[in-house]
Length: 99
Image (cartoon, rainbow, N blue to C red):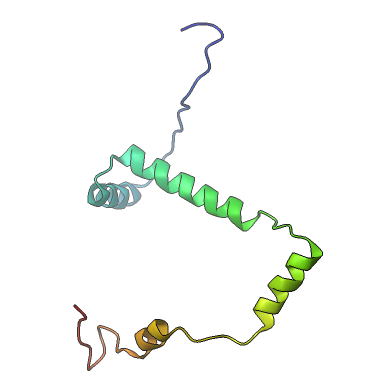
């Protein structure tokens, strides 16, 4: 390898209990992924979630006023969500599977 070549991958080593490995392997198999692919994807997704939770949203005064007006205004029901909320859950009497 050339002295100035950049590394494109970095190893990460973890010690996990057997039960954790078993559940990870089972989930990875259901997704058709290797353990490494599954753990990498899950870790990256979790990291992205944390970064998005802590990312400030910047907007001008006028945009902020519109945003606050939208939040303060009356909610409008969405007919599909109202119907969904009124349906019995699969474990409740009267449940009928939708096709």
